[in-house]
Amino acid sequence: MCHRSVGLVCNAIEERGVPTVTLAMEHGVEAPRVGYVPFPYNLPMGEPGDREGHRKVALDALSLLYDLKEPGEVAL
Image 1 (cartoon, rainbow, N blue to C red):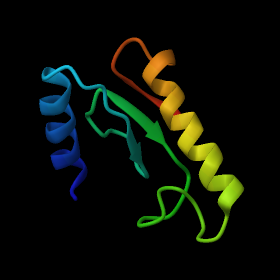
Image 2: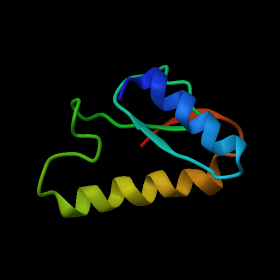
Image 3: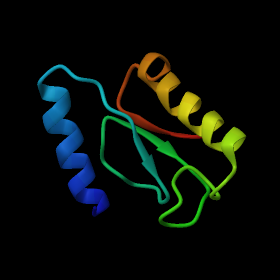
């Protein structure tokens, strides 16, 4: 999905009261909460088979629901 479409979908979901977190591989994604990850495209959670790395990304992304009070982008 295009990074612009993701922002539109997240904004529509948030307008209905459901918080969202987006993982992005590039800066400038316009969504309420964006976790920038330093991984290649198609691998937003990291390399396949890296269970501990996947867990860390997932927990860090979920923490944005509590930690990021204003819309913004944070490096994970």
